[in-house]
Image (cartoon, rainbow, N blue to C red; front, top):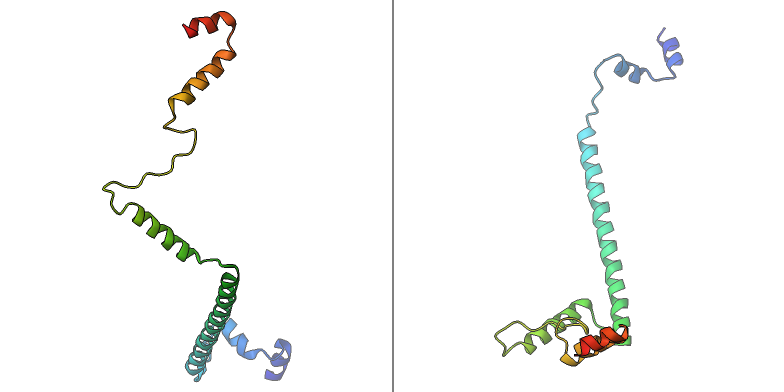
Length: 134
């Protein structure tokens, strides 16, 4: 009868015991295999990190060659130089350095205001121009 049962299940009698609620067979070497598997994963991860570190170092070497060839600077170097320039500019000052004001904003000369007024007056009808000029 066992033979017929085995043939009907396709040789899956061990799995049949699990399906019927029986206890699973515990592999005595399961703990050892799991540790070996975890160690293999750690080694693969370390190899992957080493590979990426080597690739990044090679990329940085190529980047540096390009910077040297064209006289470019790293972002960090540019930022450090800009910061040093700002500190030197305001070294003797007690207040913070003034920010550059774009043209047309804030402090304008009186002449500019008059020229704007003249421009507006040109578009007004004759009697209104006379009234504003007085």
